[in-house]
Amino acid sequence: MDTFHIDPTSGLALQAVTEVREFAPDAFIAVRGEVFDGVEEVYGVFELHPDEHPSKYVWKYVLARDWLADYDKLA
Image 1 (cartoon, one colour):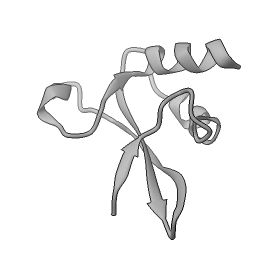
Image 2 (cartoon, rainbow, N blue to C red; image 1 turned 180 degrees about the horizontal axis):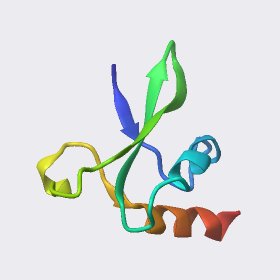
Image 3 (spheres, rainbow, N blue to C red; image 1 turned 135 degrees about the horizontal axis):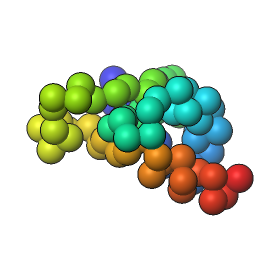
């Protein structure tokens, strides 16, 4: 399965935003989509453990507040 980062400006952001809002603003999160049967959908929103650093992972982690700020600019 291939997953990808859901940008706050993408069409899938509307489906992920409720889950993103549940995280603390300073939490590093990965907002992930997947392609399933040729259709892009939300895979999930995952928090990075506070003791870990985002550079250790292939997935893109962003601060929840930054993702939401970009999303809210367009809303």
